[in-house]
Length: 554
Picture 1 (spheres, helix red, strand yellow):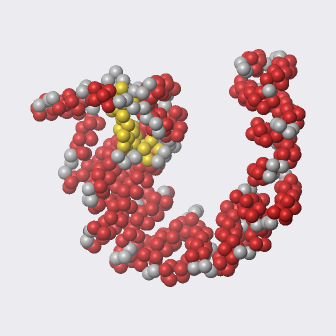
Picture 2 (spheres, rainbow, N blue to C red; picture 1 turned 90 degrees about the horizontal axis):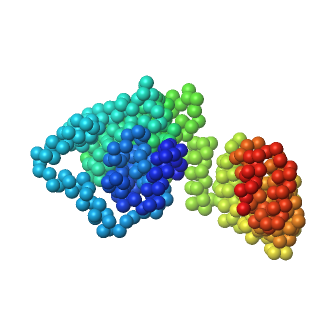
Picture 3 (cartoon, rainbow, N blue to C red; picture 1 turned 120 degrees about the vertical axis):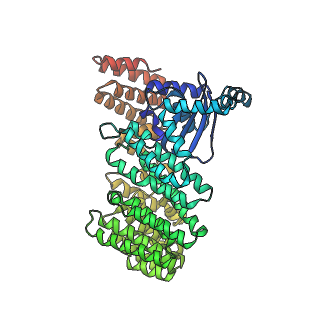
């Protein structure tokens, strides 16, 4: 689930209590060392420890040591989620925290002898098998940690299945083994053990990718775990090139190559390409480079029969370019870029390359060819035009800048309005502005750039006409008009509110009408709003729910 909208995944009663905990300052402290794992102490019937794992905006996993087990999320977890999203976690002073810590598990354990501690742990593992799994994995010998990781990952995935499928509510449970494995991989990486960091990260990939075939990953948790594994791999491999002898580097390359060749990636090709990009770090070794290029050639050949052939070819060629840039230098890279100029990413690279070398005429030619070739892709066409404008700007070609800036402005690129204005002397701008406004007026679907120009140039009569044609925008633009066009603004509001009321058919829509009336009251005054409410009551006597909502307006 996402941190930005976690409420939709948690029961209302739990959310209410969690929010209450957060607002009352029951989160004693909230810390993180890596902006992935967050640890909090929450003051409940006793002090509970909460761990939340976040990747970007995605909540990957959450743990609380309270006894609540009716659902995945308890009020303590909910409280911490509110604090994390708010970015202002409530804190008590140090004296309160120290007082609570006296009662914490840490102080209890420290007071026990070794034999008692062993018995406590054994009792806990018998009652909570999950603890046993974690302990066995955490303290497994190095030679067994890969097999232990595989077993742990699969046990959690299997245990989360219900009738062969993993519901979104159980995704976090399914990923616990992968999460623990990646924590260990990260610790290995931090300690400089790049080899085992790579091998542990690879261990996560296949079972989690396979899991996606029979799981609801609508909140992106599994995808986040995979991306986390890939980030650790990238860092570990880039570091290993500097740290490890060639023989060990070859072993790591073979391990990654073996992983990306698995059929499971046929339906998840982006992750295969990510693994191939990671492999390019080893491409300075001639033998490795040959194997990597052979793999890329095979994928390029297969892409001809792919339903997504253009995308696959583009990704493979971009990886080939990375190898050429690493091993052969800029001249060969430039040659390869122009050989593949019809691929948009290569055209961008060529344009940037020519901008850097100040060959602006070539930039313009590349852009014009791109605009012609990519007419079916408006986003790309706009990009080529913006690069072309940049070249005209550097060359000082005023007429071409004016022509292209207008073209982009009419496509709702408001940033070109100010550029265009600066290209005209003051005495010429008024005539140019009239032409621009008239051009927009002729468009049946005037974009937001048109309204922005009217506001910027203080063209209030034209803005009023726009509001009369698009009544719903009066709530946004009345502050610019109310002083000079009080009656006209009032008329637009009344017409819009009456129309909205006529179309409303349930309480939710009635409330929206009432919200409009409140804005009308703010814009035009209390007396006119009371008169409008009276008119609406008379007009909608047979709508008791609407009358109730109208009565609530203050």
